[in-house]
Length: 480
Image 1 (cartoon, rainbow, N blue to C red):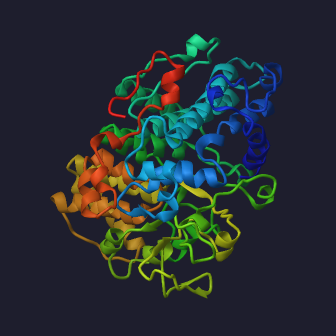
Image 2 (cartoon, rainbow, N blue to C red):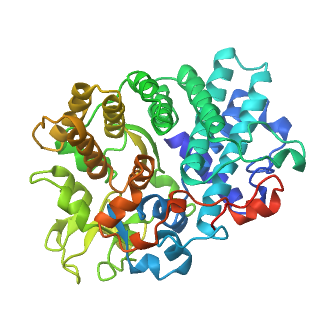
Image 3 (cartoon, rainbow, N blue to C red):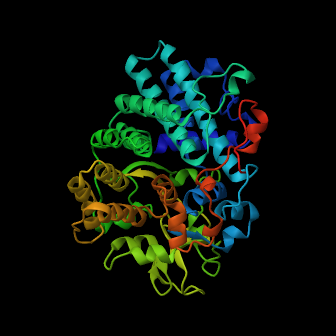
């Protein structure tokens, strides 16, 4: 990831000066002129790498503006006082948010900034005669992968989205209406399918973290699954190559920074140690997830009792994902003031990550276990229970659990349970509940503290008020 990370380090310093209303009109991230960008492979490649920037963010912005809305609204992790004490965060997790809230607006603006950078590449690279056709296809494919992922993120989170797929030459061209859901998915599928056909199967070590054909197929399969195209999802999931589950003995290393370039990770984001002191280039999930009496933790959230009740004896994922009082972590016996507190330790590599408020473990955006369980779900929906069961048991066996032999709704429920247990803290569960149509039911069953506030409108965020105010083609989302 070295080359990718170094360029983004330079980029982030300039992005800090970018205002929110420039998310689609920004000429370029660090203000190079057009004749400096579209002149060579190296220059164009740097611009492509800049388009990765908005997949995540750094410092406190990550856990508040990405991790919190993606993880603290389900039945597996519950918000604690370190979240609810801040009204702008409490409204999000308490299902009292409005269109004026800044957290969803931040997500909206940043993902559209990523779209804008990708559009620049897609529009300009094909005409670069100094590049070979293979080089042009690869750079455009990388940009279309990123645009497809940004659009998918937006579609998963908002009641409606706009689809800017061209470089605007005027303000009027930026003022687009909300696109129909099917049109959005068609664009996502088209972008990711192109990417899958033109991206390499792998990169060298220096370019670890860049999109591959398998990453494109994984996100394409996810888009198909969300759009209830189960056969299409299976067709692309089976094209993924070069990836498998790491062994049970290596499971914890997926999240503690000791084995980041492994066969299970399909797509991840992170920074190497050499960039950490240049800017605020790290996330703070260590200190954010710790209770206040433990190395100055911020007490943002805890693992729910419901999640714990679904674990089976001997499941190795418990020790890798959850820390309880009376257990040992990083060589130290832990005693929380609240003996019932259950700390999420995914992406918490050490006690130092808590005490220094700096976690550096790569953030996983797609891994093979997720693919296996998405594929199992698609098989189940098509009536191919045996194939679904094979995938489920592969995930169970890696976790140290025996095979199960299930059919019908019992198999469906096991697939859903395994997704919760396997992917807790990875930004998956709330969106699963939404697409299954069981959010209110599950929040109530799990005794989520704000379940009573949840209404169907809360499955998605409203279109941000600032977008409505700057774009006359967009109307406010009803009910907010």
